[in-house]
Length: 347
Image (tube, rainbow, N blue to C red; front, side, top):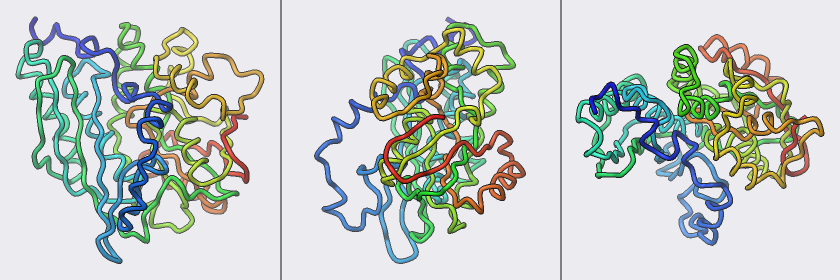
């Protein structure tokens, strides 16, 4: 096959953050690993399912380390590289940090993909890293039956400005900075059911860096931040609720969506990851009685390079919403609140 005939999205069984292991499987694999108790300098480990690991160097400096990689969700190799890099760097921003360096993670079926396509993937990743002001300083590659690309990223943060997903407080308002529906769009791409305008909309969203994260972390009224990725708004909201020992309430009508997300969900373009997500955490979710299956699937929809979910003091919420709109996050919206209690509810 020549390069134009190859559809990257058809070379893998999943795509984007929809490739993640199901939440229940991941919890089982990580059970019984209390690494934080053995290493007091480890400020953030696996205990609260946060976005990255954080290691304190001194009173003013901590290192943030994260890795993210996945299989293609789009057919354009340059766009795939850009999306994967944006997604990986997001974890640093979600912790309130500044990225300083990346390493590439590459697995490619070298008997199926021409070298120029693989170079385009790498160039896409490098372009986003350049936009973030960091080098791709090395990496590792393997011959793989399915294409895989991503980054390991290192960042720095002042421990006083570190933002975890586990510090939301009752009374906080919740802001989401990007529209939902990326997994639904990805499912439609696999079935050739999304037009060029829709693909362009999804690429624009998934290549928008969450670089507003460190600015949010400068505000003491911003209590918790996480990025919404493979477990959907419900899964990552539930992680915030568990870690913070609070109840998260999501207003479904307030959620920002990609333009065709509802239409495509109603047409049945649902990912397997959405179903697995609901099976993993549905017992902890309170839904309204009149919540159709397609709407539930959208709430569980795996986002790739999704927005930041921000728990902020109520008096600061409207001001931050305006700042986010001005900073280039036009779909940012107040989507819920934090209450005393446990679990997550949709109203």
